[in-house]
Image 1 (tube, rainbow, N blue to C red):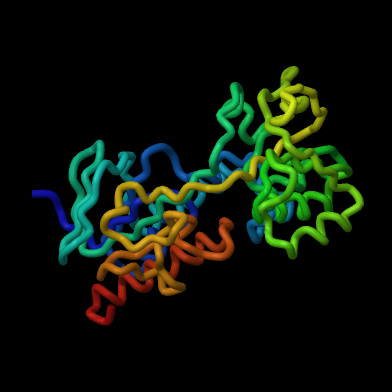
Image 2: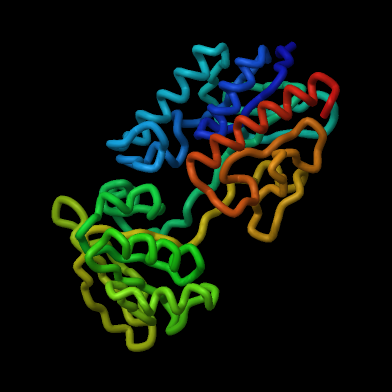
Length: 307
């Protein structure tokens, strides 16, 4: 029979490893499941400049490994395995993985959210090396340079505004002739002197000579193609929360994110959601880590009979 852990954490990003650290320090038997390597999406960022304590920035993969070492030093266990199914009902929860079945009295779901990709050839290889999905994470690397932002919603508008403060030129590429972003963003975008708009256009290719050199764009009305030279591309066409395994068990919002307040408690007793998988206003490394700490605290309270 498999052991019953106090807490099982699914996902090894900043939320998951912070939860593992706090749970282990609270004296709980904590096991963490991660299918690839520590850090999650953070590990794809070559230089993180908004994590406190590193004024010169830190590589995302390095930061993920440091979080893992800290949690394991406190007593948490990492299991490299992919979660395949979950049963979160009842007093003992079970997660079936590529390494077997795991059981626990509490579960912290910290599987994150993956940015939606354009699906262009070379996109994966250039991720973190010219192609990015987080302006707050990677924008400073393009100070004084030209970048393109692909998208037309609130996230794309916010990314364009943030990048306009450090970049020489920002080109906002959108497939329609008007933005889907809230009206509040429109005036700010128009007032920024270094933001240009490329309407009715979709990227069809990433131009590269060694590294990224630009985008090939197709006009959706005429079909004509043209090349846009740029130093970096920020893709902001939405994020997909990794909630497929719990969709029938946990309450979700319209976007598929888990409904859990600042307590991280879900609709099921003993199950908590932390990080980008949780419905929240701001998705950053620091807020994910905060969720992880809260989730571990709430799991300990639940186990003590106060949850």
